[in-house]
Image 1 (cartoon, rainbow, N blue to C red):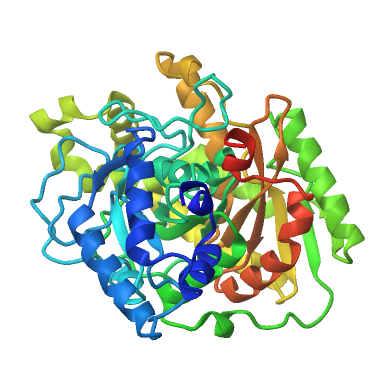
Image 2 (tube, rainbow, N blue to C red):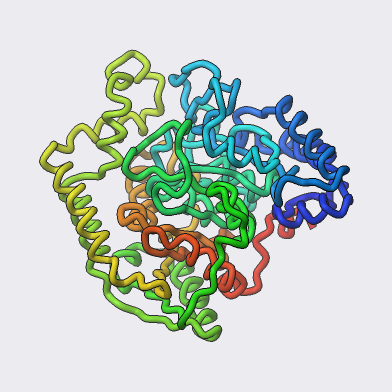
Length: 464
């Protein structure tokens, strides 16, 4: 039973459930067993009592041949930014305690209403404010591809990515403000989908940036991401995959995303592009000045996420509680206070202008592709005690995904190979604001080509 259920996608598990090969209650039992024997830094809290009730109800529905949806009985876990009724939302911190949540976050409610089984809360960077995934309070989840060397998981949805990569759950919900779903997806060899702003509800999720926050999902396959997106939007999956009329054009920027990139990251991306071209995708390499402008605006005037994070935590930063925060998170938040009102206005105006400037590129058949992250996951020991290297690495890791966040692109990271140390790399496919349907439709078509026939199932590499 254990090998039978290990590291399956949500759709694979659903087929087993529908066939009666396993019940949701048995599946939950195995899930909890795996969680208990795995890296203790992945989950910060297991919701066992709730999960047992939900699994028992799903088991009855399958017995009566009336499952609620494709997700009925499938385990799901949540980044600890989302309220789960009766649980304290800690956001990866020791200083946030608003008491047990009186109700589920809206996204939790929607996914649970489809029958998914809520297994618990996942570790994260404190207050979601780093792309590297380190957490000095609850431990840093171990990237499972390290081959004996502890590599960073990426953040801020660190536990979400590692939980899926380890096969603990097939679906983990995270958030993405500047790359916090897509980055850990790339580092851990899983799929990470960030929807356009406003597509998924954020009520009941602890914020970082009111302007840039989105929810997102980490899965083993694009098909699973589509199912979760449908549930989040209240749609059946069949309604979100329209045919794309016309030849697909993939624009590959020649600027902004390549500086300081690992040679293996570049190699894997180029090889994936060649495979896509052989599949009939039209590839266009071109300079995209807007990307340089985004980086220039941030360099000259600062980042909106820093300003909004400071304003959100202003009173906390001025209180004794600040000393109990991750010093690196605290320092970055304090830097947000350096953005003047004039600079904030310039950045907000520039964002709207640049989004409009890119609108003509996205004609329904045009998408943008480049490496999700410029580097593969670095060693944890190099970053734990070197603040300068930590800050520089964080900026580099966030750069590529931050571009899409600033421009409100939807994006999906798909594994596309390994570096010479066996660490995964990611291919970021992005579409314009609101083009989520078309993006997911294309992602299903190109997933196999992007992966190049390689297996990214961690179990296949480590539990054979």
